[in-house]
Amino acid sequence: MRIVHQEQAIHVIGIELRTSNDEAFRSIPQHWERFSRERVLEQLPPQPAPEVYAVYTHFENAGRDNRGVYSLVIGAPAAPGTPLPPGMVRAVAPASRCAAFDVPAGRHDLVGAAWQEIWARTDLDRTFVADYEHYRPDGGIEILVGLREARG
Image 1 (cartoon, rainbow, N blue to C red):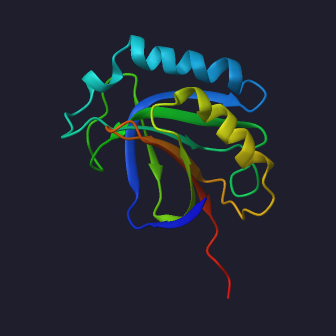
Image 2: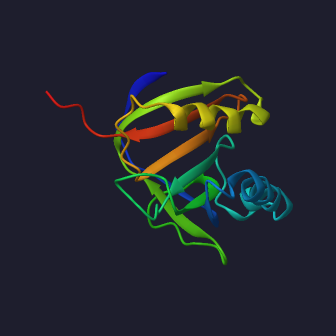
């Protein structure tokens, strides 16, 4: 894990799922299948290199915890104000301090296990506003969780 400072908000347009941690291991793989089946990236403005973001946001207990329901928006970055294609939503990961966790490149199958390790940690002062997975064109995968600003 490393601490990074996301200097700018990331705006993502994609498809939304409302789910909970109790349902995540069933509902999230189905949501990824939908993303692929509906060719979501092809419906979005072209990118120089295809990047995919999976943003976890709109927590039922925003600012407190990830118990309850939340949204998962899978899509691609877009400029603020970009028109939404039919059936899609916008999610924003605000500029913030984040804990970044790398998942081995190309190992999508290890993302769920990485989240379980993150959930088990008690040393992260999380914001529960927006966390996200970033899938880079080179196969790299990174999970970023929002942290409260360091005190002191």
